[in-house]
Length: 65
Image 1 (cartoon, rainbow, N blue to C red):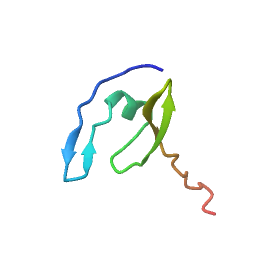
Image 2 (cartoon, rainbow, N blue to C red):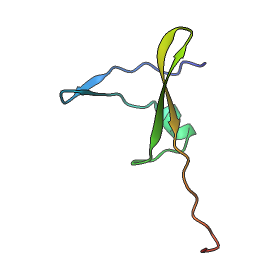
Image 3 (cartoon, rainbow, N blue to C red):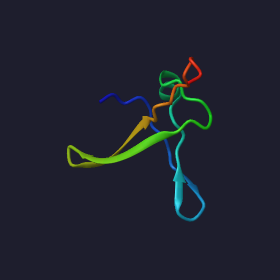
Image 4 (spheres, helix red, strand yellow):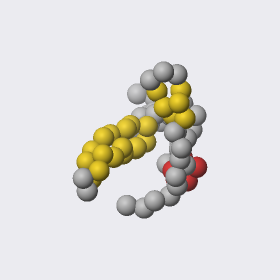
């Protein structure tokens, strides 16, 4: 696993916190505003972790089907 950045949590309302995504992750995965990422929760080496993955984009058919 490669560490690329550290981020601080920002409180957003009463129950939610937000965090920005590192530019490297966004660029390498060709993400744009309003794209969706999937967030998974797991235990790795006894630690509670989040795994963030870009959701696969559905490619429009070039044949017009």
